[in-house]
Image 1 (cartoon, rainbow, N blue to C red):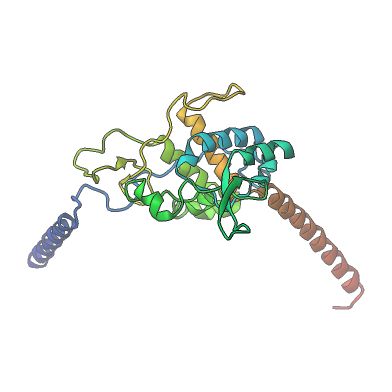
Image 2 (tube, helix red, strand yellow):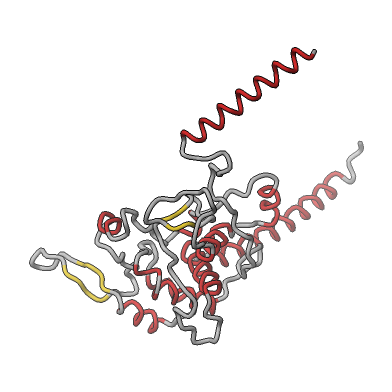
Length: 286
């Protein structure tokens, strides 16, 4: 018996040594995590959460202001048309004025040449760069992602058993949760023993690695709010996350209303089917 236990202990030591060696050869120490993100986003309280959630138009307008003054310098929204901004509470005239502040490429004209003109409500938000190669060259080799669907495309797996409860609570806010966590999660230095690539910035919430090429994009007081809302990184992050959720799913409120009506219809229909069954079979001998 002692011989068997000694043999198992020896095998365990050899296995542990092999794992440690493999980790070091792969560029990771035994204490360093090999999966990302290191920290998972906190579940935030959003007005549009749940089956009866709705967008806060005041928050959406603040988030749009943050996008225009900060994010749009690097990130495009190629799939979002200016005319959809009426969903934020802007009038048709205001949408036209906002669109006219942008320049888009059109053509060809009668001479076969492309030309630039002020954007119209039917146009989509233009990219700040002429192409992806130019975007990458201007940002240290990493092209900034398009923001049209970022709130639906970026999500952290919540794992078992959390995702089971998400089915019943209809949790679908992992994208905004992640964006908020990323914008507020920058840290000056990585933990002791962790190395990051030169020219990158440590953020434990980043979904694709230990660090990212984008520096902290916003700071307290950078964007002025006319409605008196706090001008802090946390508030900016909440507002722009909500706006990006709206950009990815502008018809969310209509979808939820339709779903609620369908559920009511199915309940009534099920009741009528049951009563019909009772009516048909009540006088049939069993």
